[in-house]
Image (tube, rainbow, N blue to C red; front, side):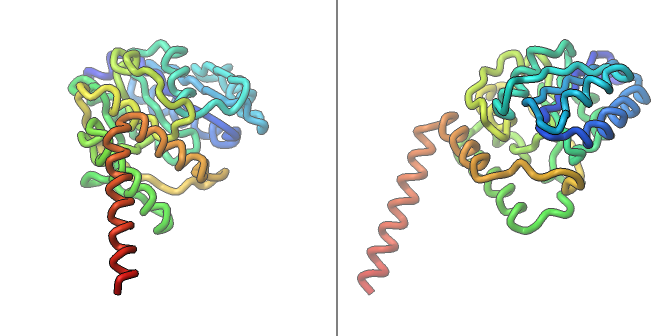
Length: 258
């Protein structure tokens, strides 16, 4: 039996309007983990979804090992995961999206490597990993957000996919994480930025466009990500902003002089 399989695993599912998806996802998770002999619990952290996500999760709890943490409103993805860590009991914690973009079949692969790493990231940007079905603009945003993290936050340079939302981590590691930006969208960046001494590994994943529901990526989410980057390393962030403004100013002066 693999080292990681000897430990109880907590699956954290932050949700907002994912009722139809969790009805599919939770049975899939159960099938995969029971098939591998992995003891597990699923924690649904719901931000008072108007579509009845929390109520659907409670129904599923009669058949599967599901616990529901219903919060009073939209309090942010990062804070949902932070609350989920405190609410869960597993020695290994897996964070994943509830929109079916993160296939449960990858969970055993991530858990397996916890014996050698503190955090195991499901990565699109290592050999064997890729994204499918996303428009060019979305791919550019993804790459750009990783580049920004690598430039500003040294701890993120350990991985190729620093903005992955699918990863496994030891409870002993996540218990040290102090929530910085409650409304943050890419919690892994915050964790790696704060806990720079952790050992991180990556495993390849095929990441596909969601088939149901709507994307949570908005201008507000992008601004929240930039705020997180700034708060993790304000001096370097402001240095790059100043450098960019200087270059723009010099180019403007040059063009006006022509």
